[in-house]
Image 1 (spheres, rainbow over the protein chains, first blue to last red):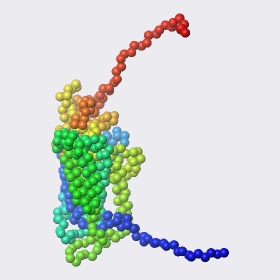
Image 2 (cartoon, one colour; image 1 turned 180 degrees about the vertical axis):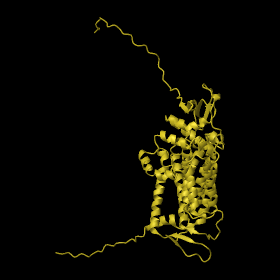
Image 3 (cartoon, helix red, strand yellow; image 1 turned 90 degrees about the vertical axis):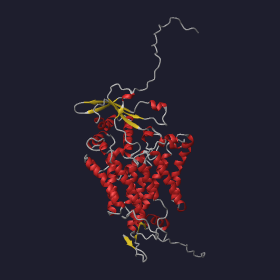
Image 4 (cartoon, rainbow over the protein chains, first blue to last red; image 1 turned 60 degrees about the vertical axis):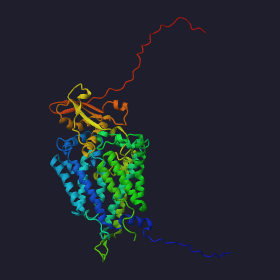
Length: 309
Length: 219
């Protein structure tokens, strides 16, 4: 006996292979054209900070480099031959390892300053930005163990800044927004912002690894090495009523500011928090270049660069 | 690759949009790889596992060549450790110096500025290496500074006390002390290690041999 059955066609929904929501969001986030002038102003600020960095390296060139310097070619070779783990040096590539001539070192720094001025004025195209980046990296790699917190941040920032087209940083946006827009400006700004967010989160998470950030001494620990601080704030911060509440404030302002800065509604407040944090850190630790570079990265954080199509 | 859209009729805007999907995908992959390596580097600051270190080593050529790596630098700003204390390098021309005989080997620069930071970082690393029993590397590092002071007979690196250090911390011997040995060809630094703490115990007289007894033990 054959039963008859109604044939039921399965209902199949065909989704178009166009990437879906995540891909369109990703493309809008990284590649939607945005104002070139905006990123040019950011780059102009970075030029100022980098020029200050190069100038700050000039006073003690003779201490570290040259034939009698602590990090002369001979010293580095002698150290490398006795240093069991040579991983520290293998990839620190720099043309400055080829010479001990102090004129070359000073000229390198002066060239860096000149390039910063040129890029801030919109001259030299992308190649000038790349040249600053390579100048900075060459110097930082030669610095070996004396390079600090500012160098990796500056390198990250110049990697981002080199992507955007050249434009002068000195002309303000006009109210009509009649400016060139380019996808590479968006990519550049986003890299600035994401780098800053990454460094901020890493700073917060590694602070948590120290007991001083749990027992209320963290803010005091920033100022404790008084002889190595430009502003002697240890005495001002030593009362328990000041350093104990200030410690969690410094700790939690950073992730809170990052979260709020990425929310369109609270973007301005988030950025104010982050800038306040960087100013406080600069005053307490005397790490001025580090704080300034991080502040520039935080300024790039914004959810919307271009209006939704 | 680039698609230039028509210019606006009201102003001189130009908009350059990205029209090549293949190049867009390639750049997207590069972004992901780059940010992953950055995250790996910045999460290795405190105490990375051996696996983490090995994975990071795969990207060493990219990260270190472009100076993008965190390199275990103190991005945490402060943990209150001894390496955060101010360090100073001093010399003396006395073979049996008192505290007053020690003088700065490097002129003081303005505290908190970049030059001062560099020297502080250098001396902190030298002190740390000294405590890791890497005396020959420390001697190599310090030799150019010592050469600039021909009268130096001893050099040392000291840690200055801070509000976070205890009396016990401050009483600890300097992390590095060395005698300067000069010859016609070279100047060498011979580290003088601090006296180790020793535990003392009362003198115990050796037991005196007792002759065997002829009496049988009582039951």
